[in-house]
Length: 353
Image 1 (cartoon, rainbow, N blue to C red):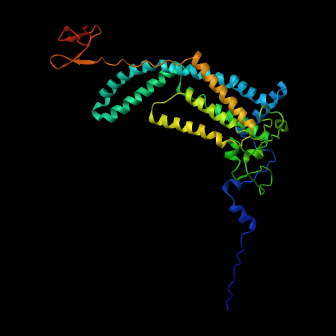
Image 2: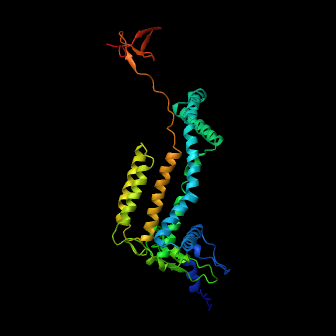
Image 3: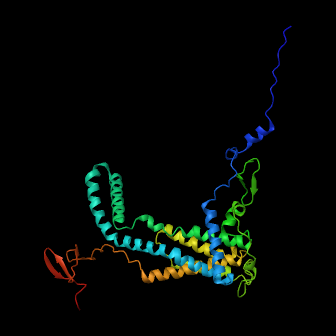
């Protein structure tokens, strides 16, 4: 009899099964015990915390006065120079509008002469391409490129970093970044030799930052909010913040387009509901937000007074036409005389009765 040799298949080891079930970003092993490099966000938050502590120690003022002073100094030293540079670029762009408009007539004729036989859509696309290239060239020659219109965007990460530093100093889980990052369940690599152990935390920012609780904030308030760690007991600060936000929106640029009006109405709605939403946020965060918004409004008023943006020069409108005795439309000259077949007749609208 022939004996069939049975092959024994050993199952995979449990450790290999567990390893294969891990996500792709967790299958790699880290063989170096050095800490992982911090992100730019964490570095900015820690820098904001250090600056707050240094200002508080240098001035010796309570936190209720140190926080608004920090907001004003931050705007005067970093944000105001950027805003002045941006305002110079916007003024140059407005002054170039007549020159750009004069080139558009040239590009229309050139586009129609070059690709007029291909249809109006091709002519329009060629015109837009030429006009855009010339606009970029003029902006580059006058040192007012379009990217300078977005120089105000760095204000947002600076503002968020200070708010997050204050949130950690208050020991609160309610904050702008805390509400976004603090409630998410994340799995983060520890960056040590044993990668089998992973940290499942409620917030990456809370775990990575080394900002201790500032106990002195609970006694260095003022007026009706002596405790800056707690929320405002009178619910006044959240609605003051709503008023400051509405003031900034009303003083900002008002767009006449449908999309711009929708965005403006959305901002007004967000400012109105910010008061009821932020009633549980610590008073320290509200004080900084109010101080930052108030200084932003004063900065805008000051720039509009000292560096006003000129009104763009537009093309002249054609003169109003009136009907002659023969029933035809005749243009009116500046002297009030109607020009008909090379002769001037008195305009009835300008004649004295």
